[in-house]
Amino acid sequence: TLQGTSSFDGSGDFEPIPAGDYTLEIEEVKEQVSKAGNQMLNITFSVIDEGEYKGRKIFEHYVLTEKALWRLKELFIALGKDVDGVVAFDPQELVGEIFIGNVIIEESEGYEPQNRIKKHKKIDSNKIVL
Image (cartoon, rainbow, N blue to C red; front, side, top):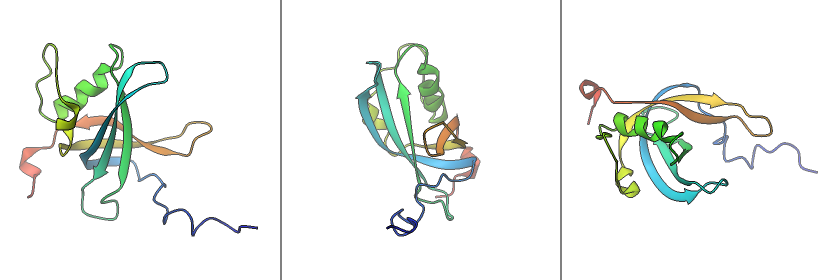
């Protein structure tokens, strides 16, 4: 019989990071179709702040429906992109973009607690240190 899973769990990498603001970089964008048949973007974000959470991943999906577009629009505004009128874009151009994500821990019945991005915020240009 197996006792505990500590040697299996990738050193706790699936534990959500604490809620708060993190500097996030878009690492990967996949175009997919939701269960309901809607176009969506599955985006992998990586924490780039120095410290123990650097390199941790957050996964979000952005459904491209009228009702849900506000989330993608908020992301675009945080990235400093123009969102007036019809926005045509190549999803792959988002890779490498950086913004501040207000990260929360979401608990859903039947699922492990996971990080979600509650708000996308512009980086204060005075705070960027290269």
